Length: 450
Image (cartoon, rainbow, N blue to C red; front, side, top):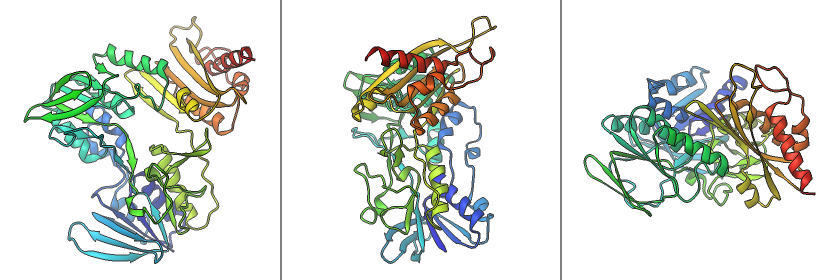
């Protein structure tokens, strides 16, 4: 088997590792535009705030480490795949260092080209001192520019924007945080928990403008000037992080794409072209709450899909379970975790959805300390199935999101959550775990509506 892999961050690395372990006889050629692979971009904020001191530690694999997996693994850095010919199983490739162009053939192709940061339609978005946040080069540029900056503007209220606002508020910078169109973290939480996150940022000195839309950037040698729909602002640096879009131009016309440009794959990560598989930020996930394609560019999805692609190029026998897009965010001394759908997204998707909210302490008040937990459960009123969950607390609630994720995966109901067996120990929870109580809140609410 001769396998070509285009792109090598999370999904590509997982595919190579799987193939090398299970099929060392296979020849694998990896083509990557950059001169590095396997960068954990989710660690950029940790580097910028100083928790991670060396950004090179955010690389978890290299050309050398992958090629050490076997004599048939070949990693070609700074090689750009210009064209895919699925009919003839061939690639047109350019060595970016020498400018040499050549062709290569494959038996199976894995496309793991990843994503671009979304460049918003804002005038002046490419002027100096306005930076994007995605890869190793971006991390170095932001760090270097910020060293001489007092005031930093963050544009975009998703996970990355919130993480950057927190990171730089920890390092003594003044933060101007701008987010418009949708509320803060709208992809992940509904308004109640978004307001708690906003309050946490405010308590740490972040100057938030969360119903304000950036319209124009300008800059000089020392400053960036931001015009919004409500005023004008000045900062020393602006970082734009408003989301990601799939990098799929290479296979446009070769495989079926969704309306958002992501690649549609079947349960085995196989595209509409039988010998082309795809994984990571370039593809749509099977989103279990809706049982439809969705775009969810998360590292967790990428490593699973990459491993499955590496398995299934030798025969389709391991299915992709789909995802609930479960994720978490550390915000100062608190944890925000979520899974599945928000109430607003569930209603938009056509569900007869409702949400139950609970605020409680996670363990008994007679213990030396306890902590408040804010919880939201989204469910379908027509069949009582759980659609999503949101949690925020100083207590580490991350693993609770994982439990809710499994329940969504298994199509469990609010009644299941209300009474599912969970441990009790005063060190950890009450006789009813707070998730049981959340389920019971939802049950009481749903019963009252009938």
